[in-house]
Amino acid sequence: MVIGILGENCAGKSTLADAIRDKLSAEVITGKDYLRLAKSEAEATALFKEKLAQTPDDKIVVYVISEKEQLSLLPETAVRVLVKADLDTIKERFRARMRGNLPAPVAQMLERKHGMFDGERHDLIYDGVAGDPNAVCEALKAYRGISIKAE
Image (cartoon, rainbow, N blue to C red):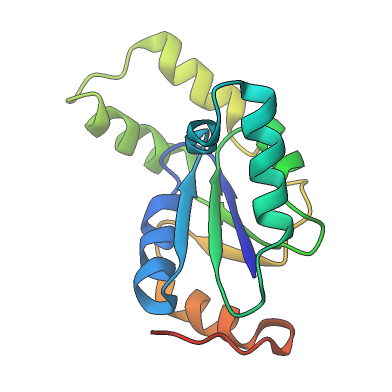
């Protein structure tokens, strides 16, 4: 089973991915980590798409996506989880990442990108501020009747 976790920077994607990894024994791949699969980007992309497409039902691979162009790497059968957070929370979390400083151009970039995944196809929504990652794990275990073997 392939699970795509999509959302903006600092929305709560990594928190959810960590919970899925821990609760469901999933492999987590973030952003462009797949580029390590080969020396050229084209070859790494092809290998990664093949890896995702050939993931067996009893194995879980979570792909954490924060850029729209990465959506094309997900197979059609992937379960897509949209992670949402309000703009103020995203800015505050980003500010903390930047050691308390949020330059105006960065704040503007976050404002421009806010809601960029809202219109994308998704199967589940996770509230990255108040959501319960365990509830998403339970929903994923039951999703489409697939039996997931947690180790």
